[in-house]
Image (cartoon, rainbow, N blue to C red; front, side, top):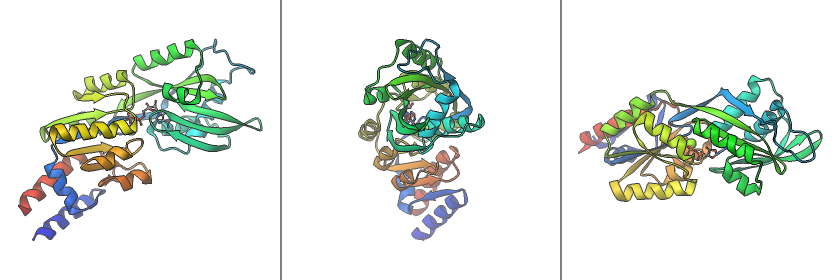
Length: 304
Ligand code: ADP
Ligand code: MG
């Protein structure tokens, strides 16, 4: 009877587009006392129409005049097209919406929690292009004009996600992306809270973005966490509360998903995360999270 009830539960999950690694995973779900969510790409979504190019006129650019908006977006989308981050997808879609053809790109490196860098072909020459936050500027050794840092801070204060675009050694503009709370996020966080001792959010984004989510969802959000720091926070949550469920999109949080007692990945086509996760939501509907908690508990009761 024991294997059967687990098998039935796994089949039920499968019919909803939920791949659960094993029956053991369901029992771990039943035992878990804490649930933590990733923010970007999980509790929030970003859309192409909300991508704006900011290019203050006064940006001093060495050697050449500053590229126009479309040139900034083309460079950015070229390096982002190979990555799966929710921000990257929005940037690439924004370029497609404007019918921009993307230049050839090589040597793309992602810097988790910071951004992405690659070499992009512009006028027959390969140029270093980076897209990301201040951590990326540090990694590239680029400072950029104070005016753009002010614009970056203004965008972040207004609740948007700004990204610097670097061309060689100069910051040539900003992309500012509007973030929205994901469908059903409020109801899902509420339902999960009823079933859990502790619910929280771990994000690599800035404090202002975390505060905004806290206000909207009434859940504590820790900001500015690099991928390895998310893993540390997960261990701390386990020490404080017991077994932890982590829900993420697998981008920059694969290590935390693997570290969690139960890692739940929203499918975004990133194969790395699928390997790190105990549960994969091929139907990326957040409502499946409380549903899985319920399924785990029902299964647990039956086999007791
Ligand atoms: P979260 O934890 O909220 O999901 P991440 O850790 O994935 O956020 O990313 C944190 C920050 O790192 C982003 O807000 C962005 O500034 C930067 N970043 C990460 N990946 C990229 C990327 N592909 N392109 C540009 N910026 C990125
Ligand atoms: Mg994320």
